Amino acid sequence: MSIATLPPSLTRHDVERIVREIVLASHDAVPSQAHHEQAGLAPKLVVSISARHCHLTDEHVVKLFGPGRTLTPQKDLYQDGFYAAEETVMIIGPKRRMLPTVRVLGPTRPASQVELAFTDGISLGIDLPVRASGKIAGTPGCVLVGPAGAIELNEGVIRAERHVHMSHADADHFGVKNGDRMSLVINGACGTVFRDLLVRADAASKLEVHIDTDEGNAADLDHATSVELIRQD
Image (cartoon, rainbow, N blue to C red):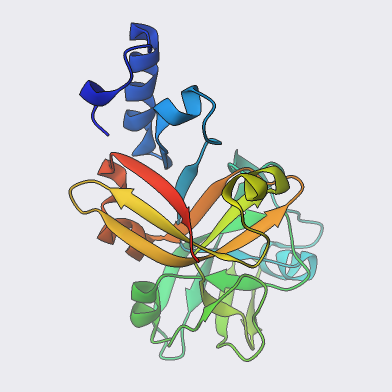
C-alpha cells in the first residue's frame, strides 16, 4: 500500500516509522500492512526469506568443529531462542559439487538437517523433496565438512515446505489451527500468491512466514509494498 492511502489519523511520526520499516525490510523481512497493525486490527506479520542453512546434533557439532565445541551464537533470529551461529559448513553433493559456506542455525536438534532452495539442489546435483522441517525419513543425504572433520548424512537434505509460525492467539485471529493451510499474498511489482503455507501454531511463536530464496526472489520480496495472510477454505 502506498503512503498516500494511509489513514489520516496517522501522525507524521507514524508515517516515518512505517517508511523506515519498509526500507529495513530489504535486510531481513517485509512488514505486513502496518496501518492495520497500528490500529490493532491485525497481529504484526513478518515474512522472512530463509536462506540455505543446516541444523546439527550435539554429536555432529563436535565431529565437525572439534572436541568440547558448542555452537557460538552470532545473530538472534526473529523467533525467540533461535539464532544464526558463527559456524559454517561445506556441503558436498553426490557428484562432488559443493556449497562452500552454509550457515549453521541453533540451537542443536535431535537430528541433523540441511535446508536448501531448489536452485541449490540443482547446483549440488540433489533432487530435493519438499518436506516439513523434521520430516526427513527417506530424503537424500550429503557430506558435511567442517574445520575438524567430516560426516556423511544418509538422509536429511530437503527443501523446507513454506510455512507460517504463529501463536495460538494468532491462530484464533485467523480462524486456523496447527496443520491447516493458508495463502500468502505479496503485493508489489512482482506480486504473487503463495498457496498452501503450513500453519505451525504453538504457545510461544511470533507471527512469521518462512519462504526460501527462490520464492523470495520470484516475488521480489525486498521491494514488496505489503503482505497478507489469508485462510484457505
